[in-house]
Length: 91
Image (tube, rainbow, N blue to C red):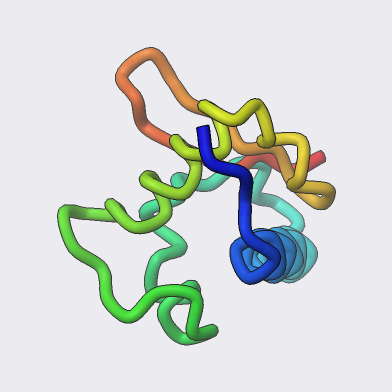
């Protein structure tokens, strides 16, 4: 399995920070579907566009799971449900 490039590691760190800021701005929310943050991720320049209802972030999260690197998220926890729906949870 390929190692993560420095560019991808930086992207993951920036996504982590944005999700952490999202939770800070919305204290009553404890978890959010990853696909529901796609507009925010696109605005921040992490992805060019959304397709297939969150595919870009789901693809990144699946790659991290395969590499056992989901721990790279320090401000939130990435969770995959039994139906393969990804969400972020507040820490």
